[in-house]
Length: 322
Image 1: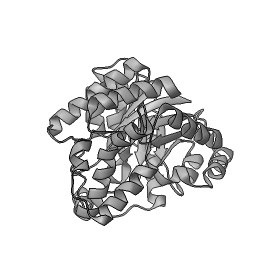
Image 2 (image 1 turned 90 degrees about the vertical axis):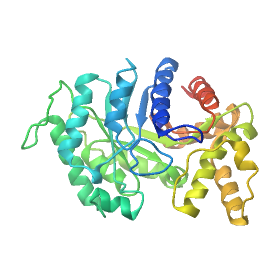
Image 3 (image 1 turned 180 degrees about the horizontal axis):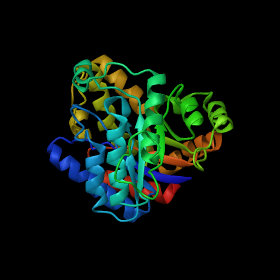
Image 4 (image 1 turned 30 degrees about the vertical axis):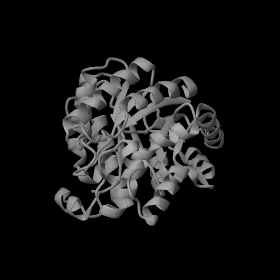
């Protein structure tokens, strides 16, 4: 099973948003040296705690500092863009970094109602999304009514960030899928993936490809890994209270907070479900998931406040699972 990284360009207490962008570039350089297959970045608009709202721009910066690792988006949120513009951006990346670019497409709208209004899209049905994905694919292939440029020898492959009916859309269009979040724990996931593979309609030689995405962190012990997960889990707890996704804090700062009973319960629940543990724990959990899903690739999206601890986790994961 191939191993890749998804970096959300998380901001950290004590560091600027510009530094967060540079941290993503540095992590990509390290990922290439470690032997990761892909390095993907995300799109989040006007979200406190996340510095990157433009995957194509960040990928251009990363591409100029790397030479082998595949680069892509996890993903571009298509309802926020016109298909032609998305195709032009990723064709340009493919022309600049031939054979290294992936286009991950998602359906999510803006984080809050004001952001959705600013982006000009308040809703997007599965039918609309499917039509827009098809339009992007046609622009990439050069078969649309207008020709997106620059033209490249091969268009970048498309992967769908799929939940619910997204698997059926990916099968119908002949695209790879990326699955994450609660869907990974669904009892019917193996059956749904079997259906995806069975109904897959190849497009220009494509084949079914299943990528599983999870916030994965590894340390010497389960307790140490749990502490690594604490900053991200705490940020999620705070976002549900304040509506804002804050920068990552050091675990020590979180541990001395006077938490409400509700916050403490939410925090414990988040830590219990986090994919964080010792090498033995991670090997067992990921091994069981791989066996039940027959996934082709694992897309690791873990983050923590301590960048050196995150780098160590990245290095241990590629040795453990790669």
